[in-house]
Image 1 (cartoon, rainbow, N blue to C red):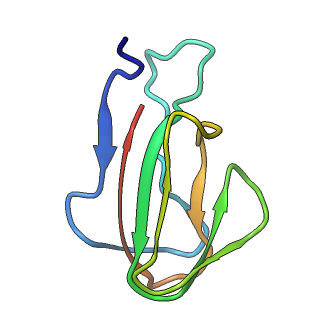
Image 2: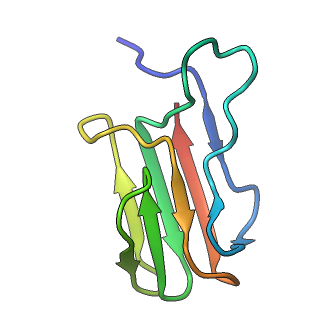
Length: 93
């Protein structure tokens, strides 16, 4: 059984802006639904704090990845707290 409808992610290693939302905006054709990811991976190249779905900051060490899949709570918001952190992400929605 298929769960998702597409994929999104970084085309290249990207540099963070403090507290900038990584999850792309919800497309206008989504009615009464917020885009969320059931599978996601984020890798940071320097020590950084992330916030998931508006929660408390979580430390990721340099070159550490955060990964979640369909068994975890969906992600609708992902923020890197610090500026100038190089990162790459990909996800399925």
